[in-house]
Figure 1: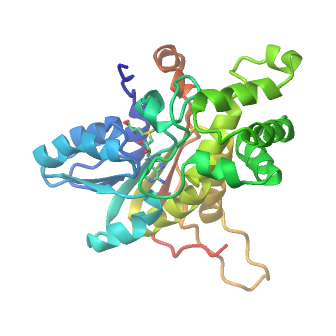
Figure 2: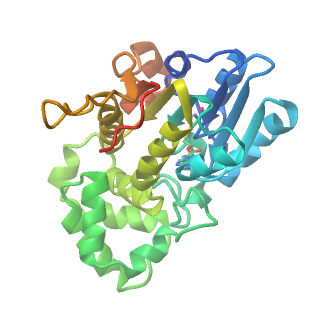
Figure 3: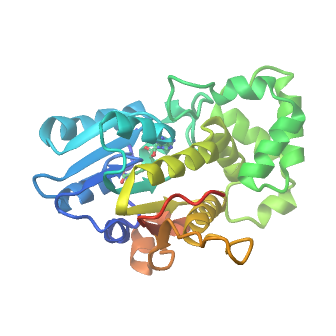
Amino acid sequence: MPQAEHQPVLLDAALTGLGVRAHGVYVDATFGRGGHSRGVLARLGEKGRLIAFDQDPDAEAHARPLVEGDARFSFVRSSFAELGERIAALGLAGRVDGVLFDLGVSSPQFDVAERGFSFRHAGPLDMRMNPDAGQPLSTWLHAASHGEIASVIKRYGEEPMAGRIAGAIVDARAAGPIQDTGRLAAIVAGAIPARVAAGKRIHPATRTFQAFRMYINDEIGALDRGLESAFDVLAPGGRLAVISFHSLEDRRVKRFIRAQARPAPPPVPMAPVVEPALSEIGKPVRADAAELAVNARARSAILRVAERTAAAKVTT
Ligand SMILES: C[S@@+](CC[C@H](N)C(=O)[O-])C[C@H]1O[C@@H](n2cnc3c(N)ncnc32)[C@H](O)[C@@H]1O
């Protein structure tokens, strides 16, 4: 099956937000197919440097031509949760001028049936971005309790029918393990009453698949660790730019930036004022009509940018 190209979302806004300087050091925490990385490289001069991360082996394969052909570029196959250690090991802690996160999964990840991300393509129920770690969704679904399944669907999918869907999964697995995307999609669709499904614009399994993907990849936990790490490696004046696609992610990003940018006033009148360690740059950016017309993935995207100040990290 031909794979969809991955069109980078909010490319210009992200590059403007990063404020790429010719000789700066930048980190692309989510290489994917390298759309944003190529944009950064196009703005970097000879002495500039870009270190890209991705935990997916297919992303690593797509990064190879750049690794081999551009001395300014290097690739780290790792979760961005480990960005701090990896950047420190390169001797660049506190020297990074910008870190970009473009969260979630890429279009090609969805399109490869074997990865098991999409209910639109029949494939094994895996969903791991890094197939060398953790457990495939099928293994977890076989062992998890009704309560655990319902809570994941509710928390990460914000799905009102979470309890019914979890019940249908538990009933269905009694007849044999659920090992493919098609069977799971049918079980989920069957659990949603026709009158509820009829009023929705999205496929009945959309929220549940998204919830399982976020859980299996610990996406929120990795984001929290990634944001802390990115903050720690930035030089004063360095920029943090984050594109998120889900309100749960955006809330974490907003909360993280605000905690560093708007420290609470001192608890007692004579206590020293805590200086902000980040300053918010501009307002959150969403895709405009022109981008939406050519890239449906941009619909829920939101970009937030902040700049590291010279002040110490605010303890929260
Ligand atoms: C939306 S895509 C990025 C697309 C990229 N900006 C481009 O223009 O091609 C997100 C990428 O982040 C990767 N990813 C998601 N979570 C990650 C994590 N915790 N650590 C490293 N990579 C991650 C995924 O494997 C995927 O390739």
